[in-house]
Image (cartoon, rainbow, N blue to C red; front, top):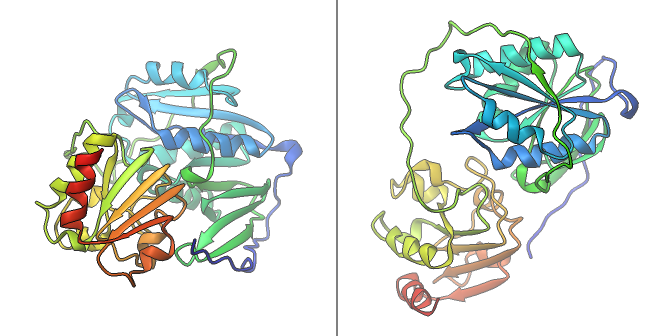
Length: 334
């Protein structure tokens, strides 16, 4: 398989004191919606537990009781802090970042951790700015309490960065860590400090696309289409195949930019990062930006009529064929 690994770039160094393993205490920001914990939060919990200290989970919401109960059962969680307020109903990042800062100030956490999801990327930089520290984003491994590994240049180089900030603000790439399991006993919970509700922004509306298919971020099987699909209607071929094998459907940036599908399906450097057991790339050339979002998949299958397409360099199995002939035939045989 195609893979480039280069030596780490120079470490980030700021003139501050830093935590050691002996005094690590991490605060995990729990992402949830419709009383369900986001799958990427379970991966972030595993990363937080790797630090070696205690892990406290922070759950905020208008009525978070159900989520609090589930979080308390997770392995690695020593305590759950609960922020119950209508201000957290729509997860405005300004309010969440204020909550993180107030909680850190009260309890003295050395690490603030969240998944590198749209939610985490929206909240954590604001918290870092309020704390006047540098964020370490999209980590894939933890070397020590102050040293982390993260991809750069669309994953073509791996950097090891060291932060000397007294408070580490971190986002975690979910596909790099296994999901946390359940504990033998539930962790205790208590109220979190009050946060200042934002006056800088307000919730207007939300438009969600609902599907019976698995979530793209956490699906074990993904079928993705590229510019070779030619139009949005042809994505129906992929949906038919996905229904046969219980897969999620994604797309390359080229397909999204062409208006074939919604940008919520975009996989790549500027889209979602996935690492399913099976990834089927249909009509995708394999630009480096796309590979950054799926190259950690366990098994990669490529279907493309161009034998020179870069996607074949990372594929475990390749089929040089017209997708409009190959995909229907494969679907019939599934």
